[in-house]
Image (cartoon, rainbow, N blue to C red; front, side, top):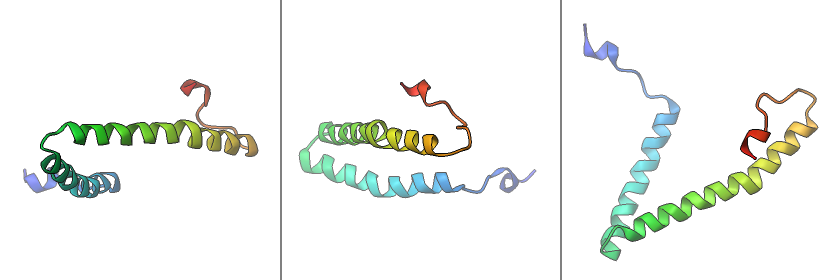
Length: 83
């Protein structure tokens, strides 16, 4: 059996992760060298994660709720699970 047949082609999600990592990894290394430690890298990553979480809760969730309320079709996923 050929190894080539066992390898799956990259899907779009994986390619997006690779593209993001190709930008963020050098930026993290630069920040580590500029500050002399990894603490600043983890602080920046934490702030980015908190910003994404706040965006999901305070912007995307109300938009989704309004979309579901205005549509005539029933929602596929209940919104109460995240509350």
